[in-house]
Length: 166
Image (spheres, rainbow, N blue to C red):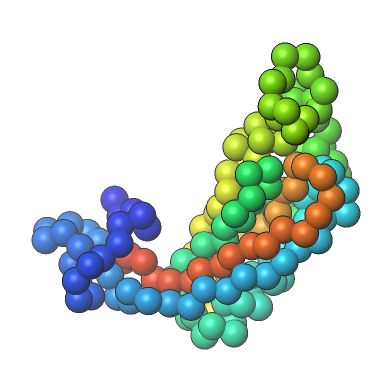
């Protein structure tokens, strides 16, 4: 198994002799963009912005990593064809983790947002092939904002991190 958390310190080549992981590129561009959320709980589709960046960067093969550096926001991949799916996700998260549940101790009053963001995760990885994101027919990438309405900055890093040698 090859991990994107491994950072090579030497020249490109095998990370570990005998492993199935090699590094073809040790440096690639990083891009940030901002997304405005319309309300406290929102899923905003960002697939188009990520695809545009992949094309601008000229990445033909690799992995696009999308990361949001915010503790009450997350990134997920889910259905983008039927808006009722986003509605149902928001409804279920709010039912299971209500904003004002008794027992929360966090002074800012957004403990539910931190829990929901942790469940979503702060990043996702999407394979890039032929200069296009490899997603299912009905899949999209979403910023999941769980706290007050504001602008979140996302970072997208495209790089061929590892290759399985067959």
